[in-house]
Image (cartoon, rainbow, N blue to C red; front, side):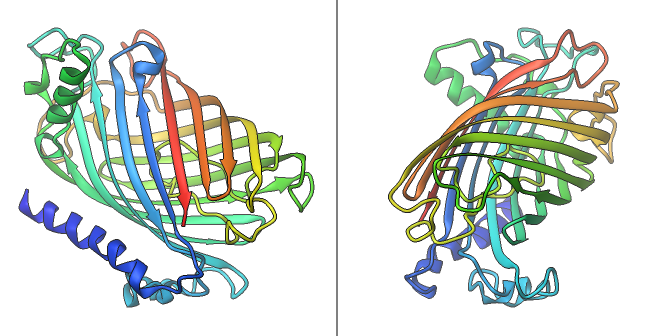
Amino acid sequence: MKPLLYLLTACLLPVAAQAQDIDPNRYGTLTFYFENDLFGNTDANYTNGARIGWSSPNLKKFGDDPTLGQMAGYFDGFGTDTYERNVAITLGQSMFTPMDTDARDLVKDQRPYAGWLYVGMGLIWKNERVKNSLVFNVGVVGPWSYAEETQRLVHEARDIDYPQGWDNQLGNEIGVNISYERMWRIRDRRDNHGFDWDILPYAGATLGNVMTHATVGTEVRFGYNLPDDFGTGAITEAATTPTALENPYTSKSWANRLGFHFFIRGEGRAVARNIFLDGNTFRDSHSVDKYPLVADLSAGFAVNWKNTKLSYAYIYRTREYRGQDEGQIFGSITLSFNF
C-alpha cells in the first residue's frame, strides 16, 4: 500500500507548488465530481464515484507546465502550433456492489463487490472546434482501494444499513489504463451571446486491465450564454477535467455574465474487458457474464457565472451483465472553478 501512497503524493504535491511558479495572469481549473445511485433511490451496481481534478492554464507546449515539466514535454508533437494545451491531474475512487447487499455469503449470480482507487495524468490539446484527451490512470482494485471503509463511513453518517458482503470483494490488483478521446464542437454561432446551442460528438477508446472498450457519443446543449468549453461528462476513463478555451475573466462567454443551459447526452460502449464484472486478471475470483454493449443516456442542467460552473445530470445506464434485473439510474454533480 505504501507505494500507492507515495505515488499519490508525488502526483498531487506539485499542484500546490504551481501557484508560485506560473504567471499570476493565467488560470487553471479545479473540478469536483460526485456520482451516486442515491439519486435513483437504489444502492447497488455502480453505487458511488468521487473525483477531484486539476488542469493547468492553457499552454503553448506541454513542457511549459512546471508541474510535470520535461516528462509532459515529450508529447509536444501532438497537435499543431495553433492548438492550446493543458496538463491535468486527477485522484478518484469508484465502488461497486451486487444488488443483494444483505447477504454475507457470495452472491454468485450478481456482480462482485469491488473498489477502484486511482490517480491519473491527462494531456489535452484543443482549438475552438476539436478537443483531444490522452489519459493515463494507475491505481488499485481490491481492499487497498478502501472502498469498503469509505462506504461504511458514508452509511454510518447517513444512519442506513451497511452492505454485508465486502469480505467477498475482488482481490488486490494494480490497475493501469490508457485512454484517448476526440471531441468535436458544432455550434450555432461563434460569439455565444444570448440563447445558443451546440453539438458535441465524440469517440474514444480505453485499453488496460481495468477497462478495455471503444466509445462513441454525443452531447447537445441549449441555453443562455453557453460556456466556451466542451461540456461536462460523467466520470469515465477519458473524461478529463474540463478546461475553458480562454481566460474566464476576459472571454466573451465567461466574463461577469450569468449563463445556464440544458443538455442531453448519449453514449455507447463496446466492452471487451471490465474488471468489475470479469473479475481479477491474474487470479481466480468471482465474475459474471457481461454484456458486450452498454449505453448511458443522460439529461441535465448547468449554470455558469464568472469563474464557476455547476452541473447536475440524471443518468440511465443499460444492464451490464446477464442476471441484472434492470438498468441503473444514478446522479452526477460536477463543480468547476477557474482560477
